[in-house]
Length: 295
Image (cartoon, rainbow, N blue to C red; front, side):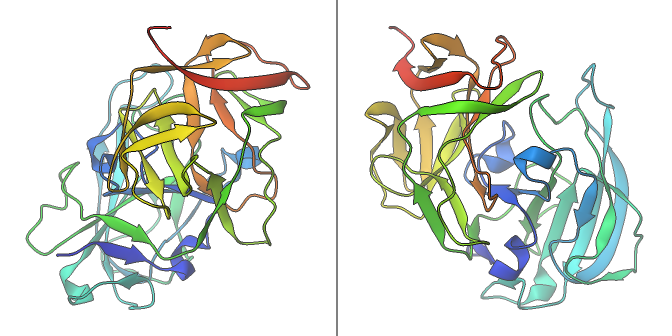
């Protein structure tokens, strides 16, 4: 089957989404999407609105990696989609299975749900890095694909226009957590509801975690063999997928774990720095660079 397009009606329920910002193989080529109901200022929301209308086929508890800060189990919900307005596909909706993780379900097999209905409560499992906010992980399987395996979902496209925000790599810290800091730049200059993201030098919106995850993506822009930000080379492009170079992200010249790229419609959009090894303070001015690790 060809790539599946998630409609604007589906995506507009969420404050943020990412196809590539994850360490797991399902995201390597944008074959899964993480949907965040909460903004960066409300990342630990527990609301779990269903991305699509459908019928619950099955729910089950599944094993998750063991982490000291999270349970070693998660939950899987399988839905049969029923509304063609949710996904664009050349074949029948009846041939698709929507696979959802990170929700403790209040629904059960046979239940009909409408887009936006609560599926249950968002949970944090061992699949999460400590800096990752609560979200639904969504993949779509064709008729001959195993819905239980972690990998194997179909490629996804997003049926919304994305606006790339130019960013010079500077900003002031406006939010901090134990493992991250958020800057006040770039600002979301677009009308309410427009999804935006940090632009690469060549255009398009960057998606993924550099360099703490293996690769990333460039959405809505031209294919580019070399992808850069403010003249700093990030990696090599293959279609919309980016293979990061061996690089180090720095904040005011000091190394940090990385820089998080995603698409959002937050009014208070800003760059998210992953920095469990450093304490950045609110009000601190920061300059971010991406340099070859050898330097």
